[in-house]
Length: 131
Image 1 (spheres, helix red, strand yellow):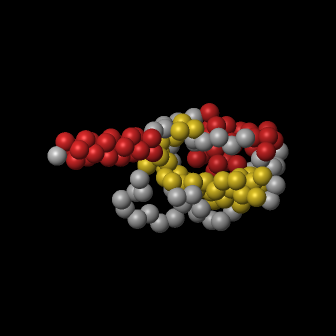
Image 2 (spheres, one colour):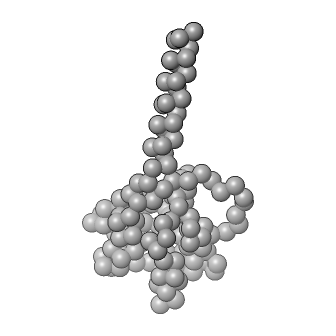
Image 3 (spheres, one colour):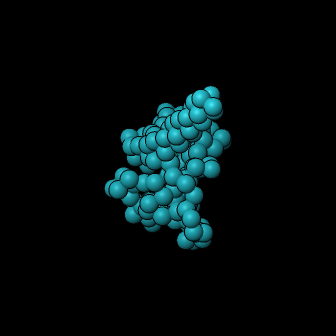
């Protein structure tokens, strides 16, 4: 009986630890020296702008490298569409595909991330697309 209790406690501890690590805020590191271009897409009209200038690339990537983002579970309600999409390239290989669902959440691969307040300004992307 004691073995079952100890085993149950050990399993519960492992599950809680894994959940804690999964949801713990993490930095998203994109080494700027390897990024050759970024595509910025507008989800409302399909317009795309490509950036190859290292200074522009750094301006776009810095908020991801300098801040921590908390993974979150998939939103409970179905969402239609997306606001913006960043495709980050190293040569011809896509390093990351970041899809912004709103000013509060984005997706990279299968993971959803919450955006901390005032970390990523979607108006900045709107301005980049209008120039």
